[in-house]
Amino acid sequence: MNKHLTLNPPIVNACGILSYLDVFERLEKTGANFGAWVPKSIGPFEKQGNPNPTIYNDGNVMLNAFALPTHSIQSWINEFENTKLKKPIIGSVWGTKPEDYQNIIKKVDKYVEAWEINVSCPNKEVGEKSLMESMTEKIKDIITPLRNTTQKPIIAKLSPNEDYITITKSIIDHVDYVACGNTLGPGLAIDIYSKKPILAGFAGGMSGDAIKPKTMKMVNDIYKIASKKDVKIIAYGGISKWQDIVEYAIAGASIFGVGTALMHKDTEQITEYINKMWTSVENYLKEENTSFDKLVGCLDG
Amino acid sequence: MDDKYKCTKIKEIITHNEFNKTFVLDHSFDEAYPGQFAMVWLPGIDEKPISFSAQNEITIKKIGPFTKKAFELKEGDKIWLRGPYGKGYKALDKPYYVFGGGCGIAPLKFFIKKNKATIKTVYLGCRSKTDILFLDDFIKLAEKNNIELTIFTEDGSFGKKGMITDTDEEFSDKYNYAICGPEMMIKAVAEKINIPKQTYVSIERYMKCAVGLCGECSFSGYRVCVDGPVFSYDIVKKLPHFGSKRRTKTGELIDM
Ligand SMILES: Cc1cc2nc3c(=O)[nH]c(=O)nc-3n(C[C@H](O)[C@H](O)[C@H](O)COP(=O)(O)OP(=O)(O)OC[C@H]3O[C@@H](n4cnc5c(N)ncnc54)[C@H](O)[C@@H]3O)c2cc1C
Ligand SMILES: Cc1cc2nc3c(=O)[nH]c(=O)nc-3n(C[C@H](O)[C@H](O)[C@H](O)COP(=O)(O)O)c2cc1C
Ligand code: FES
Image (tube, rainbow over all chains, first blue to last red; front, side, top):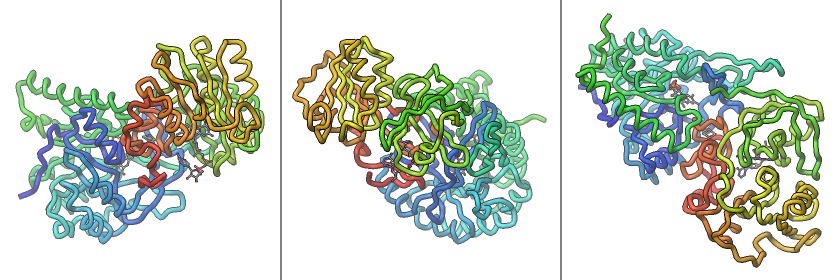
């Protein structure tokens, strides 16, 4: 039997968005009704990530090249020890080899309700050896041993850029969820007056509304494999309105992460925005005389 | 809404002293209001938050690699800005007292120029006369608009000798209060005024995205880039990170 989370509502922040426990606490205090919180990916060594500019938003698509800034596991533990968060935490972890993932999960396991295994960040620091490009062969070795490391639900966060169908088949017996997906690309943005790349990291993963059709297809492709194995889907990619959640649910997802759409919003605006999003989904369910469970994966065609 | 850069030229550079320069820009950011900031990009170098000291002006203090590079810029050079970002000083329902310390004087000049008629008193505090940015502008503004101007220098080289908190004025709730400067100065002045609900202060934290996404600029959970940088002191005074903690580039929370 696979282990699944009961989130109320089934909406989370996308990893790397809002990022820190004090930000989540502030939103909880303001009344923001997220079903769980996903802190920034925790990694095996401290790194600052790329210098600025780390983001570029041209109005159509967002590019980011943070390249996984990470502080020490001990300072993460200090934050977890002191948090007053009420909603569950889904830990996100990245590494360069299977042992990295296992070590971090062992140390932080008691603070989280589930683990999102980030094997899909397309970004790297300039001059850095690619962290996660061509992970295809490594993913199975990273994911498979984790059942012995943690009893918590395991979420594999995959990339839309790789052969995700082959990857999904290779790990499907060892996970409870597949998260679709990380940022697309990476892409390149150029400044015409300096003739330089805008992002200090040169290229950056793409997110926001524009990538939604790609992740929608990914969700549906993976749902067809996962639904036979009691594995559920988390959708990340351009969710900005309640209709996006309904579309992703129809395609097969049952948890929904919001990232880029939170751009330019202060704490009160995020609160109002998120709370309205789920009530709108509930209104839709009522109007359509259906239930959320019936909606998931009901794509007709 | 996009976050594209505006590439503009530097029309004029005002050198205040060894550590402070003002860059007057060709482009005017007409939407910008006092207390807001831009992300200023020097391609191939870095990008940092800098407050507007006028709609076409930024004032930079040389403290590290980025600001050192900015100091090498010449009139006519290009400079890239995105913004304006953040929440600035609140609209005026009561006349204002304004308190500026160090580099924090620059955005307040913008504030005073925009709201001349409703400024009652300006207090500036600096180490020495040469540190008082825009001194002539302040003197003229004060004379023309009937604003009381009191300047403190620590070495007594101009105005009164002492700290900005040495004033013996009694503050009343008939006024609003705007403070900009180092966090310790903000704390000292705001505590002295002791009318937190009518006091607005500007907070700085390290920034990456400046659009509220990454959480890097968290100040006890408020993202300074979208919830601030100007906050009501009534909120700020209760926050455990005030005067005490900030996040580094790795995201680690450390003592200031
Ligand atoms: C909203 C906002 C508005 C700003 N407005 C202006 C402005 O108008 N003019 C201006 O000159 N600067 C302004 N700053 C500050 C400016 O962005 C920083 O000083 C910038 O980091 C300088 O870059 P640097 O590479 O020169 O130095 P850095 O290498 O970034 O910093 C030099 C030293 O200062 C320390 N430091 C950096 N940031 C902080 C911090 N927040 N608290 C404590 N120590 C710190 C560093 O650890 C380092 O030791 C503003 C910052 C914010 C957030
Ligand atoms: C600024 C930024 C930082 C991100 N950091 C991470 C990260 O640390 N780990 C991760 O798994 N995904 C990270 N992502 C990817 C998001 O979690 C999400 O998968 C992606 O942005 C698509 O969702 P969206 O279109 O709603 O933003 C990041 C995305 C952005 C925009
Ligand atoms: S700098 Fe990214 S949230 Fe403020």
